[in-house]
Amino acid sequence: MTVVSKICFSICLVSIVVAIGLALSMIWMSHSSEFMWKSLATCGVVFLGSSFLAVVGRMFDKDSR
Image (cartoon, rainbow, N blue to C red; front, side):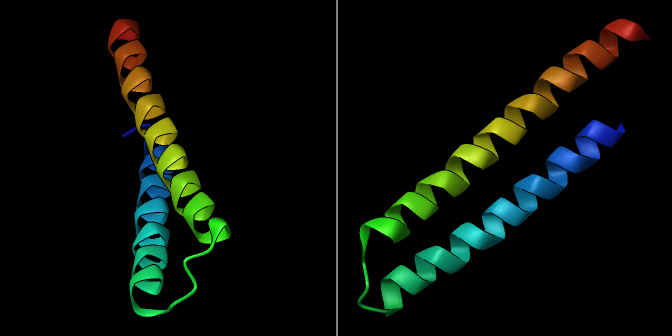
């Protein structure tokens, strides 16, 4: 794995853990505010962005070999 792939993988893992924590908090506590929904959406956007970056990084890594 390249350095970019490792960083993207770490960001994806952190995003998943934070999103699970937010989702559980929204289920078990009665504070379903706009901030919580925006935080959950932000985790999703960060996850998708780092996933796409990892895929693009792999595509360009194959070309350099």
